[in-house]
Length: 270
Length: 256
Image 1 (tube, helix red, strand yellow):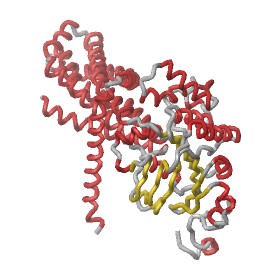
Image 2 (cartoon, chains in turn brown, red):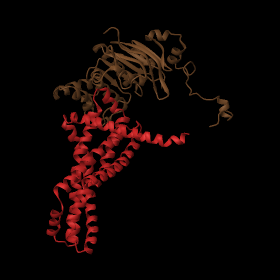
Image 3 (cartoon, one colour):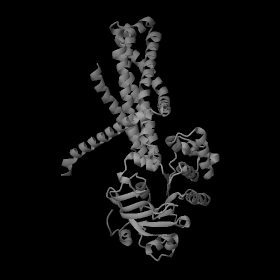
């Protein structure tokens, strides 16, 4: 396992039009560890992953990966860097016109000149790792949501990336598939020393495997630490999030006028 | 105050839309030579866009030929010039109707399927997935489809015209009793390979490029939702049709 941060996010500001997503976000992601990034829906967790993979660029502030400022990289260098990244999309994002086998083989066929035999072996190894070797001939349309996610995971790790980004890897999975994915994340981290970043709101499951975590709210980091530190924390942000309480510093309701005024139509007219 | 600036805003939006398409066109041209390094993908796309359109275009061509021959025959009969039927139909098809109608049918069949395919790839994040896998979607998705459009449109226009001539033959010779020798020889006499056939093919190549480019642009930039994909598909037909008809006027005014 490496030492020091692999990814450094430095005072990042970002917004879509007038809607500000991040207002001074800073964090460090250590190499070779599993880092969980948690927060309620709509806090920009997916946007954060898109900033880290260079799909989006911050309005202000910097994202550094392996000591390189992403915004300063040429497209060619960025693409070289991306070959060291694996990205698991929440939707799976499998190519609908290719079979499961060809989906997993896709990065190998694009980036390497390996023989068909070797590609065949590598793809089947990765599919075996996610338990779907038998599904190699199926098309993505024939897979359940959980299976599609596992195929997408096999595709994301087929190039043996240095860092792996998981966007909501557990959403909509049954407990068995959830367990399989969590074990795989730990396994990849332990055997290959892969740096893993998991963006999630499945707090309890992910905290079991994470080495460190950040909680985001309102465009910035509101708490950070190891799972043990977070569970001991008295901080109201952390407590509300970990305990799933509707009342607290994180507003659950969309801003609205006073309920009774709204009911009796004495408030703002619509 | 705002109403005063409305025409300005519309003009700026229009210029911006043109500019974005021009940049996309240049990026596609830039990516195209590299896409040719893997001809298998281009051939696959030629097969795809060709196979979805070929029956439609063949049948369309046949009917247009049948109608053209009927119309021309009645008009020519008044002057006792029915012997020119073959040449006249061939000229109309090769110079004008073949390229234009093929392109319009292509926009409705292959263009829409390209736009919806790419729109769906955008909506299900397949294009983003390709980007983060360090595969350039311009090279891997857009350029091969663009090349396929350029290759398949003239072939399809050729099929359209051939079927049209067959239709005219059926009406002129089999139905109206024109002498087959007269029918074919008038065609040989009237049609010039250089100025009619080649110019028609040049039109087709340009329509193929324009049509495919509009379809892939709209699909590639579709809003990532079911509604967005639908809108992109509709827009691709509307814009392609306008572009084809406008380009046809410009090209014809230069060629003939």
